[in-house]
Length: 252
Image (tube, rainbow, N blue to C red):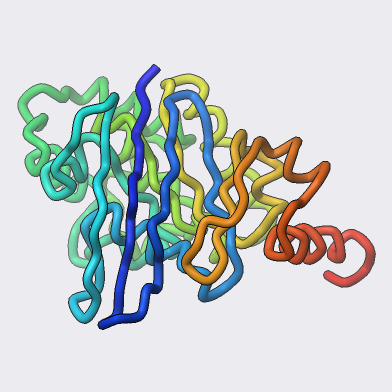
């Protein structure tokens, strides 16, 4: 088992801390959900840990893989890969899926080591066939693009996934299928996943561990079962209440 640890991660806008000394870990074979309402700092946390801190902000902190400090810029695409909220923004509309795969494999140095059979296996694992290699993004549905992004992640052989609201822009049926796919791949390939979400319904379906963030602070952590059984902070209670209200008629 490998462990990716985020230590003392902070993001500041001048003297204002937008994310303040956040610490958590992601283990292979498990899904850790970073949960918070809009503006809580969850997405900013994921951006900072990938080296994508907005230019007007300053980030600090360290990331360790199995107790060894890692260089974020050199690790992106090799140790961890991201799955974006809107899959259409992740692909160049002028490039085919085959070109996207080639570009990714060249960027992480595995182009000459990856054969057609391995590409076919990755596509098959996400429910796609070789025919998608000739397609362009505009010829594919949102669900197909999200599956293609997950296939790219598999081909990168990164051990960890950072998924920021990966199903928000998909319809409910496709959402459910993508979540099931992610859970299956985490189990099958012993991947570690950080799931960024505001939705405890998503957490309940696929996560193992939960970290609740509020106003840039990590306020509560625990297993999914323990957090649902008892919330120790108002932030966690509000998020659970929002989830339960859907089933009590609030989401109709």
